[in-house]
Length: 220
Image (cartoon, rainbow, N blue to C red):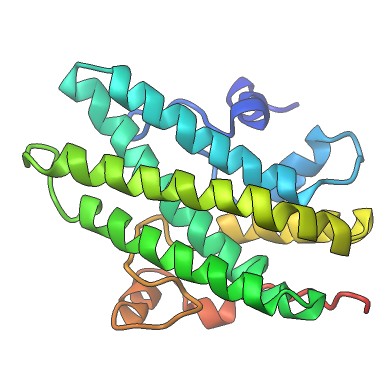
Protein backbone atom coordinates (compact mmCIF):
# COMPACT_ATOMS: atom_id res chain seq x y z
CA UNK A 1 0.00 0.00 0.00
CA UNK A 2 1.27 3.45 -0.85
CA UNK A 3 2.06 5.76 2.04
CA UNK A 4 0.01 8.89 2.57
CA UNK A 5 2.96 11.01 1.48
CA UNK A 6 3.52 8.96 -1.68
CA UNK A 7 -0.16 8.95 -2.59
CA UNK A 8 -0.36 12.71 -2.05
CA UNK A 9 2.52 13.21 -4.44
CA UNK A 10 0.46 11.93 -7.35
CA UNK A 11 -1.87 14.91 -6.99
CA UNK A 12 0.70 17.58 -6.11
CA UNK A 13 4.09 15.97 -6.94
CA UNK A 14 5.30 17.04 -3.49
CA UNK A 15 5.38 15.83 0.10
CA UNK A 16 6.43 17.15 3.49
CA UNK A 17 10.07 17.46 4.51
CA UNK A 18 11.94 19.72 6.94
CA UNK A 19 14.50 20.63 4.26
CA UNK A 20 12.10 21.47 1.45
CA UNK A 21 8.55 22.68 1.02
CA UNK A 22 6.82 19.45 0.10
CA UNK A 23 9.62 18.32 -2.30
CA UNK A 24 9.04 15.58 -4.80
CA UNK A 25 10.17 12.07 -4.19
CA UNK A 26 13.18 11.39 -6.40
CA UNK A 27 13.70 7.71 -5.68
CA UNK A 28 14.01 5.14 -8.46
CA UNK A 29 10.55 3.84 -7.53
CA UNK A 30 8.88 7.04 -8.76
CA UNK A 31 8.16 5.61 -12.23
CA UNK A 32 6.62 2.43 -10.85
CA UNK A 33 4.57 4.44 -8.37
CA UNK A 34 3.34 6.76 -11.11
CA UNK A 35 2.36 3.77 -13.25
CA UNK A 36 0.44 2.27 -10.34
CA UNK A 37 -1.34 5.56 -9.78
CA UNK A 38 -2.71 5.59 -13.32
CA UNK A 39 -4.38 2.20 -12.96
CA UNK A 40 -2.69 0.92 -16.11
CA UNK A 41 -3.71 3.89 -18.26
CA UNK A 42 -1.22 5.45 -20.67
CA UNK A 43 0.61 8.55 -19.49
CA UNK A 44 0.52 11.79 -21.49
CA UNK A 45 3.95 13.40 -21.73
CA UNK A 46 2.48 16.90 -22.05
CA UNK A 47 0.50 16.37 -18.85
CA UNK A 48 3.60 15.21 -16.96
CA UNK A 49 5.49 18.31 -18.09
CA UNK A 50 2.58 20.58 -17.23
CA UNK A 51 2.39 19.12 -13.72
CA UNK A 52 5.91 20.46 -13.20
CA UNK A 53 4.94 23.85 -14.63
CA UNK A 54 1.89 24.12 -12.38
CA UNK A 55 3.90 23.05 -9.36
CA UNK A 56 6.42 25.86 -9.90
CA UNK A 57 3.65 28.44 -10.26
CA UNK A 58 1.99 27.26 -7.05
CA UNK A 59 5.28 27.34 -5.15
CA UNK A 60 5.98 30.89 -6.33
CA UNK A 61 2.60 32.06 -5.06
CA UNK A 62 3.25 30.41 -1.70
CA UNK A 63 6.68 32.04 -1.55
CA UNK A 64 5.25 35.49 -2.25
CA UNK A 65 2.46 35.13 0.30
CA UNK A 66 4.70 33.82 3.07
CA UNK A 67 6.15 36.52 5.31
CA UNK A 68 8.02 34.41 7.85
CA UNK A 69 11.64 34.03 6.76
CA UNK A 70 11.96 30.53 8.21
CA UNK A 71 8.90 29.44 6.24
CA UNK A 72 10.06 31.12 3.02
CA UNK A 73 13.43 29.38 2.97
CA UNK A 74 12.20 25.80 2.34
CA UNK A 75 9.82 27.06 -0.34
CA UNK A 76 12.70 28.88 -2.06
CA UNK A 77 14.88 25.76 -1.78
CA UNK A 78 12.16 23.71 -3.42
CA UNK A 79 11.67 26.22 -6.22
CA UNK A 80 15.37 26.10 -7.08
CA UNK A 81 15.49 22.33 -6.83
CA UNK A 82 12.40 21.73 -8.96
CA UNK A 83 13.41 24.15 -11.71
CA UNK A 84 16.86 22.52 -11.90
CA UNK A 85 15.46 18.99 -12.04
CA UNK A 86 12.78 19.87 -14.59
CA UNK A 87 15.14 21.49 -17.09
CA UNK A 88 17.78 18.77 -16.99
CA UNK A 89 15.23 15.95 -17.04
CA UNK A 90 13.68 17.36 -20.22
CA UNK A 91 17.11 17.72 -21.82
CA UNK A 92 18.16 14.10 -21.32
CA UNK A 93 14.80 12.55 -22.16
CA UNK A 94 12.42 14.65 -24.25
CA UNK A 95 14.70 16.94 -26.28
CA UNK A 96 16.88 14.01 -27.33
CA UNK A 97 13.90 12.59 -29.18
CA UNK A 98 12.81 15.77 -30.95
CA UNK A 99 15.05 15.08 -33.96
CA UNK A 100 13.37 11.74 -34.65
CA UNK A 101 10.03 13.58 -34.65
CA UNK A 102 11.26 16.26 -37.06
CA UNK A 103 11.29 18.92 -34.34
CA UNK A 104 14.94 19.97 -34.56
CA UNK A 105 14.14 23.69 -34.51
CA UNK A 106 11.82 23.27 -31.55
CA UNK A 107 14.53 21.35 -29.70
CA UNK A 108 17.05 24.14 -30.29
CA UNK A 109 14.62 26.83 -29.12
CA UNK A 110 13.67 24.81 -26.05
CA UNK A 111 17.28 24.22 -25.07
CA UNK A 112 18.13 27.88 -25.52
CA UNK A 113 15.23 28.87 -23.28
CA UNK A 114 16.20 26.34 -20.64
CA UNK A 115 19.81 27.53 -20.66
CA UNK A 116 18.70 31.07 -19.84
CA UNK A 117 16.47 29.78 -17.05
CA UNK A 118 19.33 27.64 -15.70
CA UNK A 119 21.64 30.65 -15.57
CA UNK A 120 19.09 32.65 -13.59
CA UNK A 121 18.34 29.76 -11.23
CA UNK A 122 22.06 29.30 -10.64
CA UNK A 123 22.45 32.99 -9.81
CA UNK A 124 19.72 32.72 -7.19
CA UNK A 125 21.27 29.57 -5.76
CA UNK A 126 24.67 31.25 -5.43
CA UNK A 127 23.50 33.85 -2.90
CA UNK A 128 22.09 33.40 0.59
CA UNK A 129 18.56 34.33 1.51
CA UNK A 130 19.89 37.15 3.68
CA UNK A 131 21.30 38.84 0.58
CA UNK A 132 19.16 41.87 -0.40
CA UNK A 133 19.22 40.68 -4.01
CA UNK A 134 18.01 37.15 -3.25
CA UNK A 135 14.27 37.77 -3.63
CA UNK A 136 14.76 39.65 -6.90
CA UNK A 137 17.01 36.92 -8.33
CA UNK A 138 14.66 34.11 -7.36
CA UNK A 139 11.53 35.79 -8.70
CA UNK A 140 13.34 36.66 -11.94
CA UNK A 141 14.34 33.02 -12.37
CA UNK A 142 10.82 31.75 -11.76
CA UNK A 143 9.30 34.32 -14.11
CA UNK A 144 11.72 33.23 -16.84
CA UNK A 145 10.73 29.62 -16.16
CA UNK A 146 7.03 30.49 -16.40
CA UNK A 147 7.50 32.45 -19.63
CA UNK A 148 9.45 29.55 -21.10
CA UNK A 149 6.84 26.97 -20.12
CA UNK A 150 3.99 29.12 -21.45
CA UNK A 151 5.76 29.24 -24.81
CA UNK A 152 6.35 25.51 -24.63
CA UNK A 153 2.71 24.74 -23.89
CA UNK A 154 1.37 26.98 -26.65
CA UNK A 155 3.90 26.18 -29.39
CA UNK A 156 5.30 22.71 -28.70
CA UNK A 157 2.57 20.77 -26.94
CA UNK A 158 0.34 20.81 -30.05
CA UNK A 159 3.26 19.48 -32.13
CA UNK A 160 3.97 16.72 -29.64
CA UNK A 161 0.33 15.69 -29.57
CA UNK A 162 0.31 15.61 -33.37
CA UNK A 163 3.54 13.63 -33.72
CA UNK A 164 3.12 11.12 -30.89
CA UNK A 165 0.83 8.15 -30.73
CA UNK A 166 -0.68 7.49 -27.27
CA UNK A 167 1.85 4.69 -26.80
CA UNK A 168 4.83 6.86 -27.78
CA UNK A 169 3.59 9.66 -25.53
CA UNK A 170 3.41 7.18 -22.67
CA UNK A 171 6.97 5.96 -23.27
CA UNK A 172 8.33 9.48 -23.45
CA UNK A 173 6.45 10.45 -20.29
CA UNK A 174 8.01 7.53 -18.44
CA UNK A 175 11.44 8.47 -19.78
CA UNK A 176 10.91 11.98 -18.41
CA UNK A 177 9.83 10.67 -14.99
CA UNK A 178 12.84 8.38 -14.87
CA UNK A 179 15.14 11.23 -15.88
CA UNK A 180 13.84 13.25 -12.92
CA UNK A 181 15.40 10.66 -10.62
CA UNK A 182 18.77 10.72 -12.41
CA UNK A 183 19.71 14.38 -12.78
CA UNK A 184 21.36 16.55 -10.17
CA UNK A 185 18.96 18.46 -7.88
CA UNK A 186 21.30 21.45 -7.88
CA UNK A 187 21.24 24.06 -10.67
CA UNK A 188 24.10 24.83 -13.01
CA UNK A 189 24.19 27.58 -15.65
CA UNK A 190 24.26 25.28 -18.68
CA UNK A 191 21.82 22.52 -19.53
CA UNK A 192 23.42 19.06 -20.00
CA UNK A 193 22.85 19.17 -23.75
CA UNK A 194 24.64 22.46 -24.42
CA UNK A 195 27.96 21.94 -22.67
CA UNK A 196 29.79 24.84 -21.10
CA UNK A 197 32.29 25.24 -18.26
CA UNK A 198 29.88 23.99 -15.62
CA UNK A 199 29.22 20.68 -17.35
CA UNK A 200 32.12 18.89 -15.67
CA UNK A 201 31.10 20.29 -12.30
CA UNK A 202 27.61 18.95 -12.79
CA UNK A 203 28.99 15.57 -13.70
CA UNK A 204 31.12 15.55 -10.57
CA UNK A 205 28.08 16.18 -8.40
CA UNK A 206 26.13 13.42 -10.10
CA UNK A 207 26.89 10.79 -12.69
CA UNK A 208 27.84 12.16 -16.14
CA UNK A 209 24.83 13.26 -18.15
CA UNK A 210 26.10 11.38 -21.20
CA UNK A 211 25.50 8.13 -19.33
CA UNK A 212 21.91 8.85 -18.38
CA UNK A 213 20.48 10.08 -21.68
CA UNK A 214 17.23 8.32 -22.45
CA UNK A 215 16.75 7.85 -26.17
CA UNK A 216 13.57 6.38 -27.59
CA UNK A 217 13.50 5.16 -31.24
CA UNK A 218 10.24 6.57 -32.56
CA UNK A 219 8.67 4.94 -35.58
CA UNK A 220 8.73 7.20 -38.64
